[in-house]
Image (cartoon, rainbow, N blue to C red):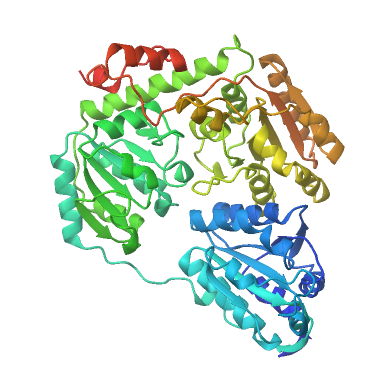
Amino acid sequence: MTKMKAGQALIKTLENWDVDHIYGVPGGSINATVDGLYQERDSVRYIQVRHEEVGAMAASADAKFTGKIGVAFGSAGPGATHLMNGLYDAKMDHVPVLALVGQVPTANMNTNFFQEMDETPIFADVAVYNRTVTNANQIPAVINEAVRTAYSQRGVSVVVLPNDLTDTEIDYTPAPTADDVKPNFTENIDPKAVHDTIKLIKEAKRPLIFAGLGLRGAAKEVEQLSEQFNIPILATAPSTGFSVDSNHQNFLGSFGRLGTKPAAEAVNAADLILFMGTNFPFARFWPQTAKIVQVNNRVEDIGKQTYADLTVVADAKAFVKALIDSKETAPETKWLTANRTNKANWDKWLDAIAADESKGLAPEAVVKAIADHSTSDALYGIDVGNNTEHATRLLPLNGGRHFAMSAWFATMGYGLPSGMGAKLSYPDKQVWSISGDGGFSMVAPDIITEVRYNLPVINVVLSNQSLGFIQHEQVGTKQRLYGVDLTDADWAKAGEAFGAIGFTVTNHEELNTVMEKIDQLQKEGNEKPIVIDAKTNNVDPIDTSMVTLDPDVFDAETIENYKKAYNVFDQPALSELLK
């Protein structure tokens, strides 16, 4: 038992949970906690962000990259509300994040004091744990419970801290933390579920594996299952690289607007989908012709997005291992080879789009250059918009390469903070962030944060002077283009003004030269962040949420219009490859 201020005891409690950095902006109502960070500065690094939203998004990215809880704080009132975007991102993507929220001293609560706000109701919807501490002695215990709950329920915990309580001296005794909550059980899988699933696989002519983040860390098992039963693989966009390597010969990509032509066509032709480790919301748009085997460890998610013919409440990785351990197999069929050919055609087409400079620098060329200059364990922070489509289609998410994205909340501005979080969590790895000019402009001042802490993230801005993702929607719904054009800016010079190294590229030659310079800077041990302003064309990337190329389904005019809209050449439909 040691006497110390409760704010310091709070930080020591987080140390025991292996938290090594925290994001936030100081304020009068959180300063005793900030003083605790000062006391523990040798163990927990304080990252002073320029906006609390950036801190919360970076904390969410920490959790996505590492699986460990991310932590951010804000002061009472505006500091608290600024956290919301990052916290909702963590909620929607089911990752553990702790928000420490300042509050005015207890004597001033309920008096309409400066910046006073009833904060608990504000966080009611976003949090799985939401408490205001009422005395200083309970702070370490409340923090422990908050972290445990965030881990166990894969969500956001919020602890509101009146500043006078964190400034009070208490007797601190370390409590059991991480080592006491690690699961040590082995799940027993129902043999009948394994038998019934294998029976459905063997009866199917066109089966698919659809893998989600519930299979994080199980890429080898997913690939082995695919090879053992000769089944093509799809994955949710955020799980690519975690649940399957993107370079595996049976991997087709993701389904939907962020996806690929081969993945969309495979889903529409499948007669069996092994829907494992995900509550993918767009499954509701799958055709009703396929049988569905849903494997999920959350019973409340079973049947939520699509009807399932066979349901298995189990850990997806354990179930995949049970299918593998059956030693059953299925032969290679034309279904698999046709899908492989379809994916190979798609990859060649993307390369051709990237190489085409007839309409200016293609964003695909920039992302392809990133891929070509990525190290074997590179990490990527991805923003929201057209850049997300390019990233999911072209980045090499295999081996040690992974990305974090704002998948279901889809909050713009996520790229820079997630790159920052990646570099803080893995300082020895190469880190890129990829943003559109819309998302980057929301958070650009936090380049200063990367400068302050010597975080040499390579921040790439795909600058097309448009909110391209929304422009596509306005065109698709036959609305007038309004509010989607963006005033251009020199992001390289802006980066330099913030203290970063800035480059502007407008064509392939400049792009290749800049990438070579960056390679050299990294060899020389550069510690400054880099901003690449890539002035790209504003060509609408192909929409794969509905691929209208199949002559057995669509009329000639519809097919021709789709080809013209997206410059689709040398891309036979899957149905043609199957004949």
